[in-house]
Image (cartoon, rainbow, N blue to C red; front, top):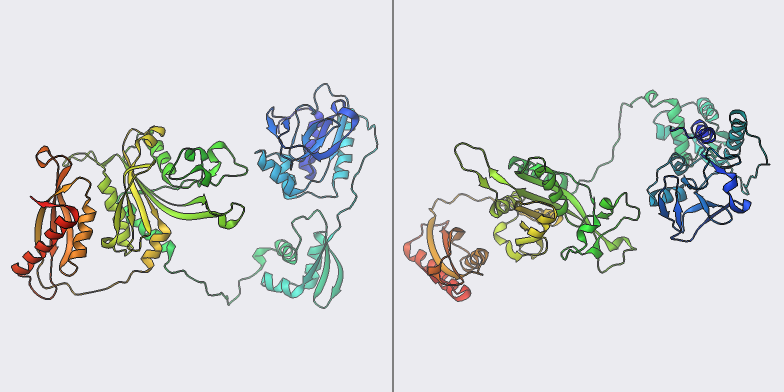
Length: 563
């Protein structure tokens, strides 16, 4: 410990010798010659020994003089009341403070001192007087002081021994071995626990107040076992166990399955803190500031709120890696996100929401430094493929998923993917340039955030069907459609599958063209249709009829024209 002066060193010595914190005040600085223990008005300014000015809460217990506070009780002293080289008069204070009060105050002011460490865990309520006398005698012996007053001891309701009923049968059951009552009595006596009464198999024991962690029968039995020795309890020949319920689907197993799949695709898993900067949500429209779950006693301004989304943690990881010459990234994270429920009071448990998310983030090159291929940047469609592969792996029918345009203050050029029942599965897209600028990232970053719990529930509903591979060939037909620019391929695919439910097996886009020759606001899609009948070989007449129906529907519903 840092030596300060002989008086303070004596109080520190007592702290380590007996576990009782003490505080020495400069007697000449106690205004009005009064010591008052009380709380002060909320917002009161108080400067502690570390020279920091703090705002007190109305729940902070203070040791005061007649005019002002001198010490945060059980935590930290004030700068104006400590012992210095010019001190000639000392006032010694020794007390037992409520552990909960001290802990809340220490967390509120982010203070962790030797005194608060002891008080938070509970101190012996009967030792302050002895520790005070011990300190006074040491000051007299070492520092040449003289005791100049009587001791003022305020202890109106002395703490009594804790009365606990101990069943010898419970001792045998919890320990797993029968211990002789004479040995139990010997152990209790060594622990200063008195047996005050005995009946058949039941003992009334009195636990001394300094054993603040021994309040119940189970605590007494734990003490008996601790002294007896865990290694002296042999394992029985037979072990009994209750049946453990396993949830279906097994979320942990599914999580590991997808993690293995992503690692196989070149991803690396990250694990970030659920605590984040509340400032990230100051101007966010997608995740409003009013829905941030804020910490009452944050460790710092960087960890003062709970995250609502994984995107900020992902961008922090991207920035960290790029600043260390690692620009080509494929990362994923499973993590919980938290928010206040807008329609319910924050004072109730139901006012908070907790959802598990799965995030994918990619940036940089997908291939680089390979002699037989050119370097290629990762794209939106690479991320889309990896995202859809997760749904496919979990047995979710992606053919029935809907794609909706989605752009907000965090994502540009994005999509929202919903299940057939309309529930949101995931959002994906390119991270908004303004957000990238805030993180000093000058490379496009693509991000997916999946509602993991919704996906798991959808996976549980899957029905695995096996059928024989068709003996009859597939037929491919292509169409080149002239469309308005706002028409998406997903609309064409959905409309085609809805029109021809029996023969149409697959719809794919293999070319997109835009140019002045097509006209303003126009584009051309080259689309391939795969047809198959599982019972017979398709004939040209049937194929042509199907393609005519599809062409007609495209013209009527989407305003398409054949090129």
